[in-house]
Image (cartoon, rainbow, N blue to C red; front, side, top):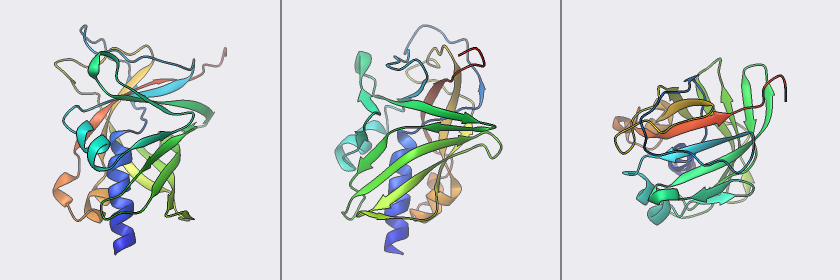
Amino acid sequence: MRTRRFIAAAASAAALASTVLLAPAANADAGHEWTHRHHHETTVVLNPKLAPVLVNTLKVKPIAPARLTAPGGTAQLSFPITSVDDDVIGHAGGLEFTPVGGGDLKLTRFDINLDTGLLDAKARLNGKRLHERVDLFALVAARPIGGSVPACAGTSAGLTLTEAAAKALGAPSFAGAFVGDACVVAPSEDD
């Protein structure tokens, strides 16, 4: 049960900082814009109401080549895209944090699965690799952050915490909690 809670805490933290793909890019009003370091990457603008929990409570740190920035004071994470295979988009880097109750959790190799509408990741708890991938987020329509949906030069979507992750946290009421919007700039057939 304790391992399940660590994983769930990790899932919720990763959910706040993970990647996503679902719907065509939104035509957003001026407001937050994603900044891209790599030509093909997913950048997530975090829900500002949840960002303090990630940084201050769970001590989230990106695992290179992922990075955490705050242009204009709005926290965002970026993950390079490594592969597009059928309906699965793979990413490099990940997140490391201290779960509630202590320890060390690393979530890496985020995959967006367009068939299932979920984002999952590989996990290591206290240095031990867990054999199953962890379903972190459901992919939904992008939502306003700071009054508008962030402009996106690719495909945008919102991230919500999965029911399974919320139950494992012992907080089923958190299922569907909005954690942020992602912008996916994936390679095209011409790249």
